Image (cartoon, rainbow over the protein chains, first blue to last red):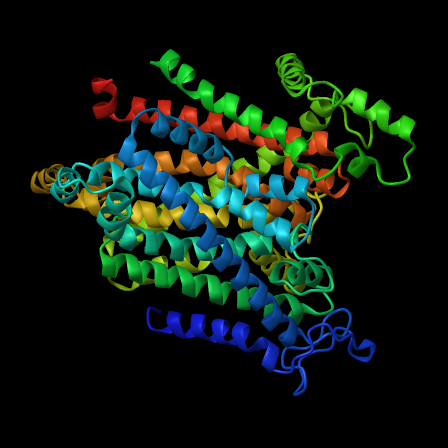
Length: 261
Length: 304
């Protein structure tokens, strides 16, 4: 499993990156092949508008991975900075941050992202915004807890005594020690963001037609489950393979870097 | 103790209220226009605006919102003009039934699998259990649901596809909803039991000649279950969030389905009320778990 995971991830990454050059036509409607089963031309068959499912899967992977990585980059930066400051300074800054994160964590799972996406309206930009608004919390909590224990360390005290500026202490003396847990957190968060993007698109809150997304493809596929099970199966197994691989990579990283849960 | 905990969650409850209240104000542009569509007359709009109190200053709106909530008034649906409290009351039993059955299923799958994995550490039952848990946690409800539907309803014909007319209709959505919790329970039980098996009291129990069954089920499991209780409590609330997707997949008329319908109709007061109801239930369940935990764990009980 641990050896297979990077291959699966690499496959989807390469497919997503190379998508524009593969000459695929994910949006090309072909009414002669509605819900057609797999053939040599369309490896995974065609959807309810006769579009090539394989081509749409690749296009969906592009959306999925782009959203997951963009949101991870944005929320990790924001959440980590916030957590560092709160953990280092303590006091009211810390109390306010903790209260705010407590409130965000009072909404189970993907509920808050659904709520934000619902009021912001559907579309790619709002989808990204909704996910950003909700996924910084984990990084803030993680960094804050770590910073709290790091601020009493000898090398931090030494830097303070030597007159290092606060940003220098935070980013040069504390942040490097946080990279391992952050990396593990980011890996798991990419997996859950892939699922979150698909969930919102499944509910019709994400990517809008005709653009492909794994979530909206599953939504369409469920409608034709009886006549064209290959549609749902193709999308479902793709999604599962990527999420599973990223989670396994996360587990491997956690064990290798010796990060506690 | 109980009082202290109750006071402790007040800031969170207040924050949840503020956040759900602000939701409607996050609507880009004019929420009234978005809700009514472009064909509405300006008279219609001002009626709805006054009805929702959107013409008043923000703090006053929030005060009104709180006052109404305290009286059990969740407002009215824009779509059907029915009181939202009634809509929620209609849907809550269905979601509660689904969540409770899922909990039972998850326990029935997760506990035995976790115990088997721990007792056969690093042998095939452990590998199989760990692998199943890993796979299950990579299957979102909108993929596992259709897969179960395909196999058990369409191919084997054992169970109804969706809806809730039949008594057996609950089985597939409950299995789907249980999957995540079952996976977590398997992993937690395994890890927790593995840790406990190394403890002195387990060795003592074995040394005094108790049968292995008693050692595991009576002595080790009692201690190993403690962290599991916390996880179950935390995850019971997450089942409600999971129900949003599962209910949509299976056409199960619960609170989750109500939420999704309200989003599709841009019925924001209903959306707001559903989100609030789910979040408050989650906070409450977490509080109860905390209290239960402190009752069960003598270390917490005597230190408090």
